[in-house]
Length: 304
Image (cartoon, rainbow, N blue to C red):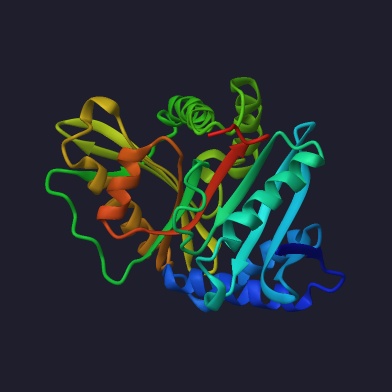
């Protein structure tokens, strides 16, 4: 019989969790320093998690970590980890742990449960909607430019229109992924942009680009260098809709990679929101690995 027992001492689980998380980040192309920084950010959240051992007839087969946190005034559940040891995998423990975690969160008033997937999970969370993916690639050599496409710095005259459009696009991405209501997404957009780009074009460590082809602007790029050691974070690499389907998406990625190398970084990382399968397919085709995938399920789970 599968049982779940909350641990008084979760140090052993945390050590193993950090080891696995580090390995997945290194596999995605991050170096040791960047991987450690990501672990440090996660470590600050782990203290609030409840960790339960998964046992069967007294034998420990794995762990599951859960929490319920405030999300704009409403409780939201989180599955921080679900791990079944390799020798016990495929015997139904994974499904039992998932169901236990959902029930644990629902009992504490959570209207949904979120999970961050950093290791292959098979079909365990296929019923969860994809809210976003963190992607990354190590840039080993300068990218090949796309013929006919150039990238130049954004001008002060272009910045206000870009900012307004970017904030609206951010809201649309959040709503499409099912993460927030339009009103909450708009507030988050205002807050995030105020924090991320307080100095506009003069914000330190920031590159703002305009991509040109066919005699005019076709897209823009927004990158933050040194997001983690050696890592540039691409907040936006955008091609105007009327120019899509012409290979310019790859040109935007090449421009972002060139700016990454020019700033002294070697990894380009970014988030793609759920519902944007076209972008996900593009990023996969040019070698960007999934570092983390965020999924969500409404509670209580609907009957199949």
